[in-house]
Image (cartoon, rainbow, N blue to C red; front, side, top):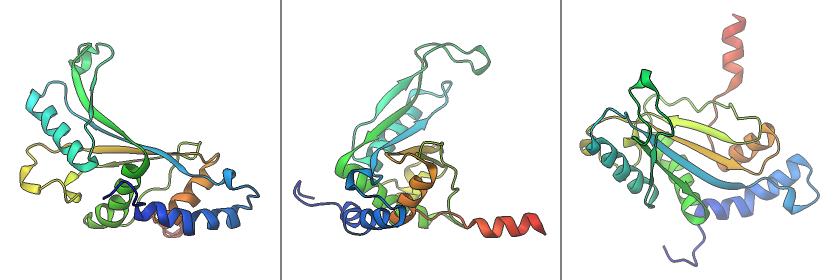
Length: 192
């Protein structure tokens, strides 16, 4: 991809989502419209595991994001977890700009639909319009071959938005194509 080319999801945001949010939420100024600031991804590994597990996690996260991850280390010792200060416990990446839009497009178009028995993602936000989700199987991404995965580790990611409320954040992600679960079915089951 050339540096001049706009990612497909960013183009969709500019042409469809932003005008839709402005109309639906009644904003008068374009700067009030919520947007996505960044996406942070994290893979945690057991501190007791050998170094090859951490290196595999770093390679997988680099393949998924197209960016070199930063290794994370324990800040303090916790005896119950056999964790000492300074031990490696995972890796993380912060995506912005076109890499962020490309990752979100691959997540929404390829990753989430390829999960077996997928019925949608939860709709719980953090109270400030930001959304977090965990994925247990990294092989949903085509960059991670299934036979290369030696140990299973999950991927957590957070989508940080400029939305002031959870309703605005949910509206933003819904218009981008995030497949939230239908709440009506859950309410009917609890009533029966």
